[in-house]
Length: 371
Ligand SMILES: *Cc1c(COP(=O)(O)O)cnc(C)c1O
Image (cartoon, rainbow, N blue to C red; front, top):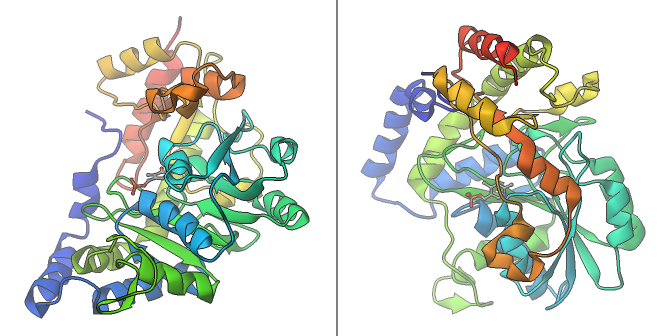
């Protein structure tokens, strides 16, 4: 069986180091808000190239708390519009509505799957305050253009970097382009904890300071509350585990690129649309291949055919946000590019422990697939 992603084998690689890290935390008697968190925040901000990283409970909270912090700082108010790609994972949009802000769904580019800057410009109104740029599948959105638009219209930029740890463009990493960025360390992400975890990165001291309070009941000092906050903390034990895995992130990205390269060069089937067919060196360098997503009109048949050959695939994502029951008010909205993407995408196995031979097997079976 070729698993879509084998978390067991991924974490097995670091078993000894993870056990040592956990033992250190257990024996310390200190489990929340201590040395391990501080060390991981330092190392992760250094990795991203930012001044600050603030650990929180998960990726959704990272986005919710950043928007909340901007409200507390007077930069946003209820009803302000946030531009967001219409094909993103639901969490990006939940963060907006959880703050009484208004999501403005903008269609992606069909080839990159990331938000189309031309469509951003057309969606800007007098109420627009934020662009929430998602680096979907491990590829940076067109940040040079997005930052230029943001500057022109005086907008804040929040990156959803949950799928793109380590991706970089023009020497600048995901998490260091916008005013702030939300990361997830959900176990299946490119940098994954053994449970839930997340972080915000920023170069803004004022924002970092209020975020540290917001994640901890709005308190900097015990029993003194500056703002109405939440409990959204990154546990010491998860921080210690993440610090172990961060050391190997670049090596793992390198392996993902190797697999992606095999797929890009090896899959030759006219029924299948590969990602980045107009691949150039710069794009290749920046993509961290959280997911390797192909497109085909015969998705259901292909998924079944691969399953019959013991190859597990997943769909990211089967239902676009505007067709979800949770957002009934949008169910009749037409977003043809997103709908096409959601109907046709299929994610192939990729990960740091997928072997070259397994990838070749996937390629061989896909090349033999026909109508
Ligand atoms: C995973 C993910 C999130 C949410 O992260 P959690 O840690 O699961 O809350 C947000 N946005 C995107 C694009 C994601 O892939």
